[in-house]
Length: 442
Image (cartoon, rainbow, N blue to C red; front, side, top):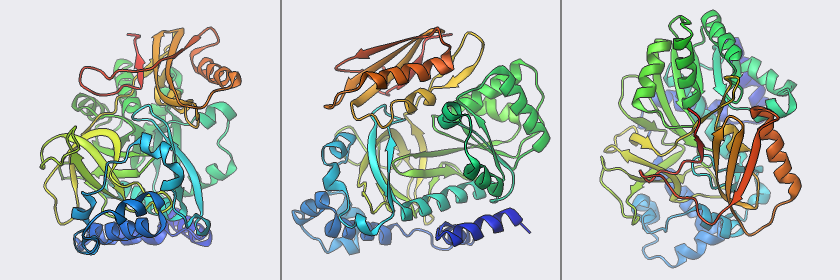
């Protein structure tokens, strides 16, 4: 009997969370090949909600013909909607909020990791429940049931700033049987200890930043640290290139599954054993691929990814241009399949002592800054960092810059020089991808 899972779900249900029920439903429909493509129904539901409660979309829908096809062919109706961008969200923030927020348990979230363009969003308890259930489902499908041992090589700036994650987080981690290594502080000794822990505990699943687990694999190889075969690895928060996958699988001697998502829309898709591509959970999001002129492209053709969240009724994101590129396979009964995802590129920063710091650490320092429109962080040398910023309309306080500098020095060393450059443009690289962190240190 899985005692931890039972305790966790009992406690969650006591606190009125609905993700235990949703998780069990999703597992059942996935395993027994029930028709698990509810996208039509959910898409109709979110569009009707937009018409009734979201001023930005209500005005738009009133101007569109053939409203009856919202029920009949909502995917076709969706194609009449304009693309939603970060700039549009910033400009129309109040209009994109649902007018029924008072009846919802809502909260603010922020994102900007994959594009370096921070935005604030509103999400609610229902969105959180669905997102949690889908995330747990992805782990289950690659071999780890909730309550079985799992380790995360993940980023936690709170652990660095405050020195602890708190008793409540520790309690939940105990129930979930989850332990963490901070990807923002990968010193040689920490990496040795983590590898030793993997050999001892042998978790059912490792969940990691793609770049961080790749660097850990290279470290184990260079230090000639032998690892017992692991069970499975899920990578996220960065592009998993073929050469990275090959290295990780060779060192950890297990299969690597790529997962794709973002703070704006949670976990979107994940690879499954024995199948090609990333399966898009049909209860969470609907994907479109368009060219640079926003015209739909056929399956197998790479383009810009548009995401419509099927579960965020507090602030609906309809045809949201997430900032990544990808390719869709022909649609199957079980839902959509992303053949591949490209577009995220996170660099690892290095200190003179050999500590590796995932670039995500530095992007988090620019979150919730109203005066930041877009940014790029460059490590020039072991002791020099340049932060390029395109300012938004609001201004900053000197104390905010001082805080960013202090937190950079916390990781890079007290002698590190942090330069701020306020610019009008930050170019993409030759491939058209935006790099929000760059390390020029070999």
